[in-house]
Amino acid sequence: MWAFNMEFIWKAILFQILICPGILSEDISDPDFIAKYDETIKKVACEAIGQKDGAQMKINLDRYSTREEMAKLAFWNFGNDFTKTKLEFGEDIKWKRDLVDTMFNIFTLSCPNDSVPHGYMNLFRELGMIYLNSAEPRTTENAGAWAHIQRVLKACEEDLTPYEVVSSMLHITGLRGDKGNFTETTLILPPEEKVDATFPQLDLVVENLWFVFSHGMGRCYHKLPETAILAPKLRALFIRDILRALLNKWGDPGPVQDFGPVVGNFDINRVQRNIRHCVTISYFINGINEFQMVRPLKVGHVNEGINSVQNRKTGATIHNT
Image (cartoon, rainbow, N blue to C red; front, side):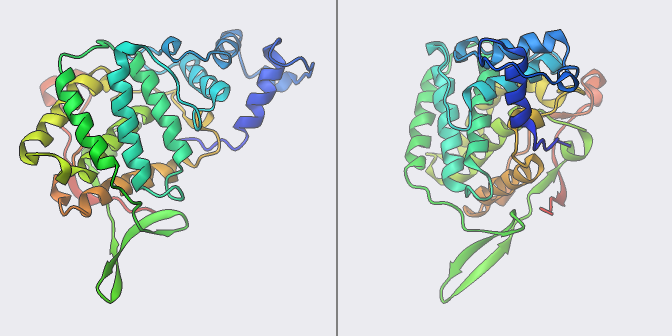
């Protein structure tokens, strides 16, 4: 589904040298490479690679991803290295920044770096913030509720250790746990959802915002006061204040969306499957498998109206092979 672009970094460096004079002074010519890019993409890339202000980084959430937008994301990353850098955004979305940071921290403290590289998650944390910086409204009427939730999540974050996963060829297959005088390995199989078989492609940025949220719900479930009441409220708040503006992009990102050039040398397919496994582990260790949430998407095209049905678990599982 997602391209694995081993040559991205070198091409990006060459691209910078060739068409963005003033960034590097060397005069190198490669007509075959330059010919792959029209003038619009060149202009977009040159502007994007020098952008350092997160508040100025925005995309259109109401339409398909375009080649220009994918170039922006790729060269914003190349110019800033989101695997190591945190962007700064306006004070009006600080509540989003705080929530996203905490959710991603809970995930990276739990899911081993060998299985899901933390640099990959850092990258998608910043891409997620660019999406949220592009969304309206920027403020929320639920500031008090989010402040309370943030305190609960921060308390959960302070007491986390990584999962002892079992892997085969870097693919998570199970979870290791001590049982008295012996060690037991449990097979971990994420539940398949209707959207997994229905949607040809889902927007990876929104996918990972959802997965780190779902993981946090599982991981911190027993930290939530009055869990039976707060958990559904938290889900509803997250959908309303965070996801609602992203739903169109999530379910229908368009035919040109390819995150290979954006993420560089990470193996997207493998890492995304491992993310799903870590999400399932977060529910398993708390004995709440049946509460694992599904994506709040409709199965069916938006124009199908009442014929669209809410996503649900299919009863099948996802194998990490």
